[in-house]
Length: 421
Image (tube, rainbow, N blue to C red; front, side, top):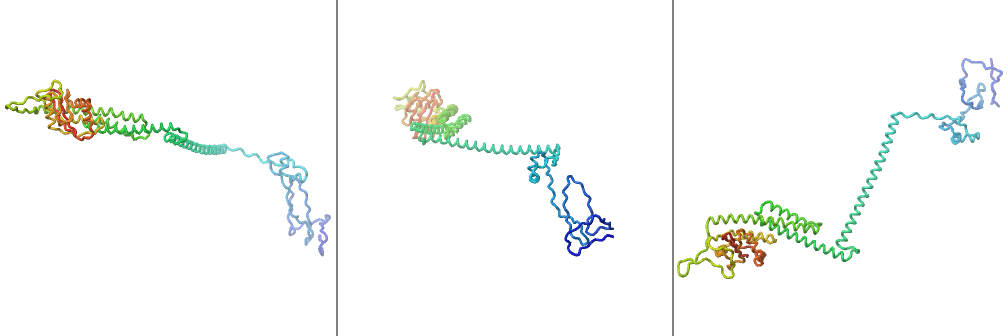
């Protein structure tokens, strides 16, 4: 049996068990003892650390020392460059003066290759990103282009307005006095032409009112021409040429309507005259002579009167006074004059019959104009009056509102007498 030596006090030093003495195995390990760990070989041997001995109640046994910091392991790197290793581990230079060798480093394995699906997803992401950037750039560029175009148009419009103001008003100092005079003359001519167009449209409107029997087509054409002329006169941008064309465009439809109305009047007059002749024959009243109960001779043309062809004798009859008045109003309308009220005069009708029986014309003292024409159409008699300055002036009067008319026919001739008042 082996005994261990106990110390009576604090030992001066710690002794290890004598190697000559062998330790006897026990049934169980001593309290506090740790099982021995088998040594595991490592890649490099680590320097042995001294184990300190501390006093133990039953003897002296080694205790584990405090844990020491582990030696820094090499950092994994994909590069085998010694200079790179030295930069990554400056401790090697300080410790040993030499950088660790490249063979002492482990290298990270190469990444696994991407699958087909991963490559497709990455490609799709790139396409989407590029498309987004392109769309954003296109939107920004388009907005800038539109903004620049709008700005240029606004500047051009403003410059055009300035040039127009300078040309019309002559406000700019660069415009000469001659240019201002020319602009003023142009403005004056245009205003006069607008007035002329308005007057021509008013005259055409009067003609339209006087030609109620001209037919639908001539009246519609005249109405369209009147509307176009008024629209051109109201247009502030119409040129002088357009204004002149609008005024000239009224003449054709106006003449067509007047001729159609005159044709209707002629036909109506012939119809009425035929009906009147069939109904009765109006004769010049006979006055008894002083010496007996005989009839007075037929009237003769007094001094100053005019002979009308081979007319004269019995058979003179009354004609349509309204037709002759309508022909006079149509002529006035073509001149832009207002129409007059037409009334049949019994005294003037009797005078027209006497003139037809005598075969000539003369004034009765109660008329303004008398005449005869070799046709039963009133328009021919009005045309004959318009060729005489005195008779034409009477038909153009503007200080009258009515006219009294008497008419008669004899041997195909028309005799008329009119009083304006």
